Amino acid sequence: MISEFPVSRKKTKTNRRKRIKSSQINWKNKKRAKMSFSRRHSEFADWT
Image 1 (cartoon, rainbow, N blue to C red):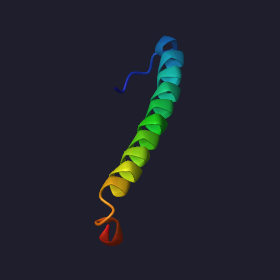
Image 2: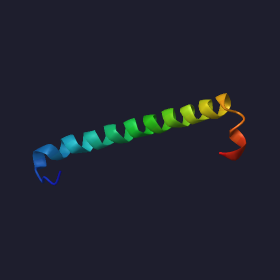
Image 3: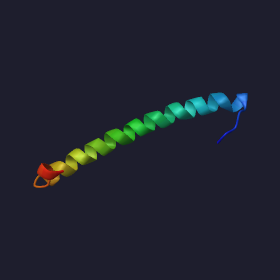
Image 4: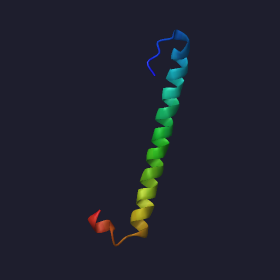
């Protein structure tokens, strides 16, 4: 993805912002999943 075109520069910027946002959402979902997992398997919560 090493392309230096001034036209596609703006597009990559917006894509990067979208990617960051989606990664943050994924991180939140992972955190929530981990919390729910530890809550479901409370016997494993001590040594994880």
